[in-house]
Image (cartoon, rainbow over all chains, first blue to last red; front, side, top):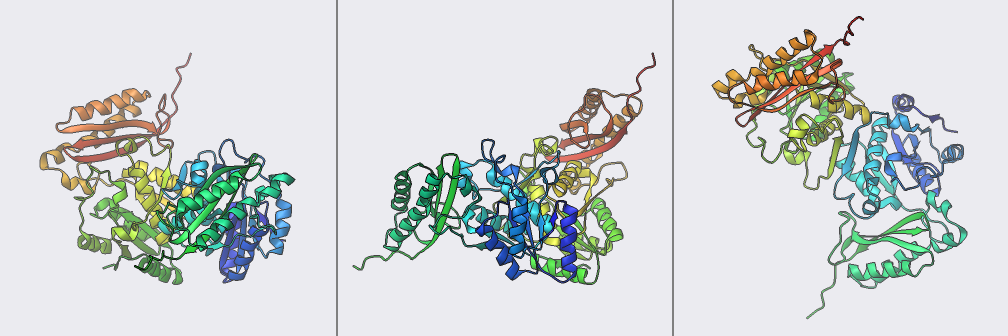
Amino acid sequence: MPPVVATVEGIRQAVGDARRRGLTVGLVPTMGALHAGHLSLCRAARAETGFVVATIFVNPTQFGPNEDFARYPRQLEIDRELCGQAGVDAIFAPAVPTMYPANFHTFVEVLDLSAGLCGASRPGHFRGVTTVVLKLFNIVGADTAYFGQKDFQQARLIRQLVHDLNVPLQVQICPIVRESDGLAMSSRNQYLDPTQRRHAVALYQALQAAQRTIEEGERDPEAIRGLLVRRIEDTPGAILDYAAVVDADRLQPLPRLHGEVLLALAVKFGATRLIDNILVQVRAEQRPMK
Amino acid sequence: MPPVVATVEGIRQAVGDARRRGLTVGLVPTMGALHAGHLSLCRAARAETGFVVATIFVNPTQFGPNEDFARYPRQLEIDRELCGQAGVDAIFAPAVPTMYPANFHTFVEVLDLSAGLCGASRPGHFRGVTTVVLKLFNIVGADTAYFGQKDFQQARLIRQLVHDLNVPLQVQICPIVRESDGLAMSSRNQYLDPTQRRHAVALYQALQAAQRTIEEGERDPEAIRGLLVRRIEDTPGAILDYAAVVDADRLQPLPRLHGEVLLALAVKFGATRLIDNILVQVRAEQRPMK
């Protein structure tokens, strides 16, 4: 089982030892409550780097005042077991005051890209994410960090952060891992009651229906967005937070669909907020022959 | 003469070569137009580290729209000569688009500490400073970075940034270097006409008078601030921007002076804004015996 390290000095020591043995270093930042999505990131890191650090830290600065920070699932011993099975070499699991001492003042923000989608629904969320992720990058000093595509906007922001601030590290985005019915894996799925859980597959089904409609030739983003909205509105117990059809790079609306397009949904079932997305490569529109 | 490197890859290569030779790395970030203050930082880096990188970059994001970005002195060949004399091993002098490509989105902010003093007079200034300094830290990957005490608030913010974001680097603050009459060295001193230059020593003289008054027993910050204000108001051509008497750690006013106290001035002569400061160690107040 991988050791659990709680101090900055301790994890730097472990990484330093690995470097002296000539190993490259992979980093998988998580908030714990690990599921198959996280473990796919650990396995990707295991395959590509010599020493794999998973971090487990429920980051208070990325939760809003009425969000689920206090009840977010914490299960360090189970996570440790899972990390061991996925080939993780060390777990960095700091306490909150280790990451945010009393006189903490500094924040990192990726403007524009953090404004829409989840950023609009969760003010301050991405400032907390980018700040803690940069701290973890600086603490661990990895060669490559692994993130999941389920948090697409987060991954996009972190790529931008690394690029803009010249962080000497590669960012790898790994595919979404799904339950057998198609629901995207999430630590928050365990909040769902059996009825909500059954209906939660609506997110993926709506995204798939939208993708099919694009593949059949639809290029009007509002038509696609309308389809997503109706699908969610037709789902018992589902409250739409947002449905977005945007350019995958700029996360901005397009007048007509082309290039890499992100279809993204955020939906609440009771107090539980779920997100999901699909990337669609959209061919240029065929103009009719005259 | 040290080589001038304009690309991120180029300076990383030079630093990587030095590391492979077993050398530690010192960093002196500057905006060029080097004077004896900058050179004292280079010499400190030379004495303490094996490979010294000076950066010369007039950083647009730290200038306000009506400030002196366009006319800020640029003299790369002279600076290169001076760097060579001070023992610098390599100069990193990137172009603006190298540091800020078209789709740049990310900023670093040290809240609270950046709000007062120069932060109040120059909105956005410190956000630009902390962002570019973190970029330079990430690009160069130094062990120690050297800053001058003249920009006290900047140095304080950078220490905080390094602490809060776990940047793996030491920050050294070096003493203010002064002209023979006491005027703090600054690249902006060359903007002064001969009359302004003669009167510019008023900043240091006011700070010294305030320090003497504290040493004689005054513990009322408003009395000290009043003295600074009057001294500047009595100086021909001087327009006070701010006079501050604050706790040197928090940069906040104190009800009574004690501990490490910062006396700081910002004064305009025409369009030229000068700053200066003194740190005073203030003994606890003696309560009268009953």
